[in-house]
Length: 157
Image (tube, rainbow, N blue to C red; front, top):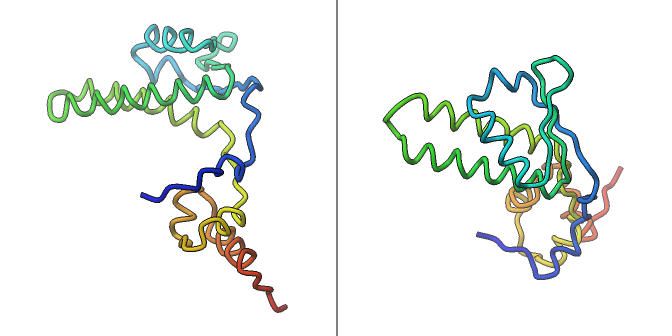
């Protein structure tokens, strides 16, 4: 697997991790069976999970690094549940999918890290466009533009 250079942290633009973020979990009670376990996990990380007025929707609030940690733990629990119950019951598989749903909701709402693609290409000149897209999550157009910029190619209009 490709690894970025040691100074890769300098190439990415940091997100504001200290800022509180709120994630709305629509229809939370009907999608999840283990509400108390999720609330316990959330409070262990220093976040809050509260119901929005009298609706079925809940609001998960916390700092970005706390939310990322919750997402990682939920994904890990879902993976272990799937491994343990490959062909046993549908109940455990649905529980794993429900935990994965919360992790996906967290990941969708968090800002994606932004990278200085040109600096990455210049620091690793043998990187391919596909590898750049896979490692940074950029689009094909952004990757090609970064490659051209790093190689000092000018577009002719």
